[in-house]
Image 1 (cartoon, rainbow, N blue to C red):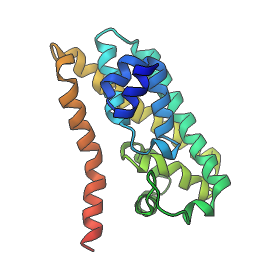
Image 2: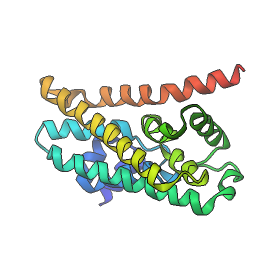
Image 3: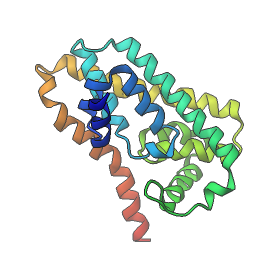
Length: 204
C-alpha cells in the first residue's frame, strides 16, 4: 500500500501499474474522468503501460479493458452529476492549486466547437477530459444523450490506448525496456493540443 501511494504521488505510470494492478489503474482512470483532483493524472500513458503489461503477461487484457471502460464511464457519470448539482457555483469558483479558470474557459470553447461530441473527443485531451462531463451537467445536457457519448468515448479512449500498448508490446522485442521513453512521449503528445491552444490564445 505504501508503495502504491508513493507511485501515485510521483505519477509514474510504470510504478502505478506494477504496484496498484487492476485496482490502481481503475482508481486513477475513475479520478481523471470525473474528479477535479484527478485533472493532472497521467491517464493516456497509464493506459498504454497497462496494455503493454498485458502483452507481457502480467495483466489479462480483456479483464483490464472491461475494468478501464467501466471506471471511465462511472467517472464521467460522477462528473456529470457533480456539474448538475453544483452548477453556477462551479463556473464562478476562483483559482486553486488544482483548478484554474483558464481550464474552464478552454473546455467551454471546446464544447462550443464540438457540441455533444466534446464528451467523446475530450477523452483524448488532458484537462478537458476531466472538466467536460462537469460542463455537460452544468449545461443540462440530457443524461440519456450524455450517457451515449460517455460510453462511446470510454470505449474509444480506453480501448484505443490499451490496444496501442498491447500491440506495440507484442510487436517490439524487449518492449518493457522502452516503457519510460514511450510513456513520456505519450504525455508530451497528449498535452501538446493544450499547449498549442494556450499559445494561440495568448496571441489573439
